[in-house]
Length: 484
Image 1: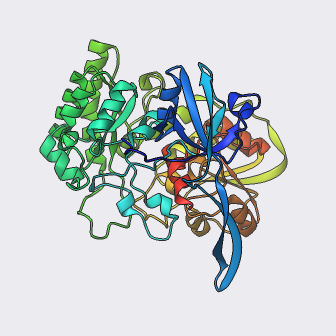
Image 2: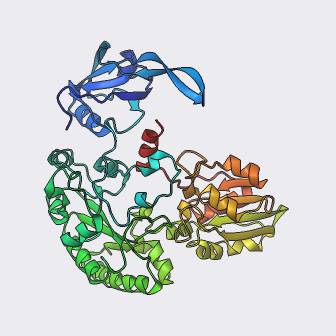
Image 3: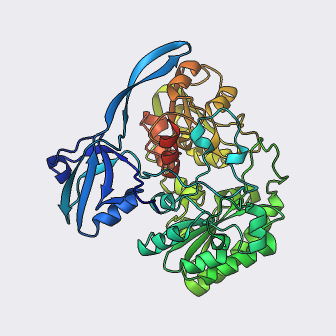
């Protein structure tokens, strides 16, 4: 909770024309300071105060102050920046059961809540050096979980956070459980005692039960030989016993080639994946018969590793955890191919670059396109040169990976997975842009589609993809705060 007199100025991005805010003289770039004389920590608190019916909004206009920044080494450049001045005058306006008409630059005004854990499988700890600093932020913020579906561990919550979740009914939340065995969970997650604000917050069963009025989507990241096997059975059994737990996703550990000074862990073998699916399928059949839902959903990676067919679309029950890698391939295949021409007006060679894990599935999916006259399609598995060969998912490929995999001029069109791109941009994780790749490769470079049908249209017509991009949701918030 904010301290007395502590404020978190919220930069205003847009003001809706004709709104109470515009009539009061508010303009983009102004700062929201308080609502009903209370500090506002985020857009959720802002909405909660407005929902009370009557609100007084306090606005400040930031002052413009010169600063000296170094744009080029050894060359001083004069710039101006807008700063909040606590002594600057403010003005207020009132609304009554009406939206003020404000949109903010960020959804969090007081910053991202940081993780209190040091998990053996944390991806941030396995990041190579040299990326933008936002990628190294260990976020664990329940507000982003509610807003965007990012998974949180709950271990950094305070008593005030818990009460707020319950009072404001921030439901659903997405919770990383990993195991219901408390000792094993501590061994896997290794939370820092100094970062844990409430000792009760690390007790996962107690937290799930205390949040009984909040719907929870949970995930279990499996580490071979640690929380799989019978431990997995125990966790699934416990989670299924709680009425507020809607479902559980099961995901194998993801590793990179950058695990210096980290515990020795191994990836899943084919046998590991097959055993895990056998256990989960027993539960899924039981839950479906007893409850009408399969409740527990293995990730696509488990099926690919096990060499087993993916479930049908119906078995994913609406794809509630699509962003967690559960059902992405089936969702991709759901929209079939459009009507295909017999031949292209002019010959075209297309390379479909993708991760090692998905290459086989993609190759089979696009086989009908190879019947089109003049169209040559190659699905090219791209080894991850940034995170290491052990990283096989498509979404973590970078410009460096494609530079190693593709030669200039060898095709007319290179299609990259849309999940490799930062949301709203054509930038990959290593800040390589598609424009750079087009110049270097001397060919067109475009993102593919979120569905097979979209991908076909990109191949045939050059239509810009509207598919998923990484950075949407919680990561977009991290990006905005990491640019300073």
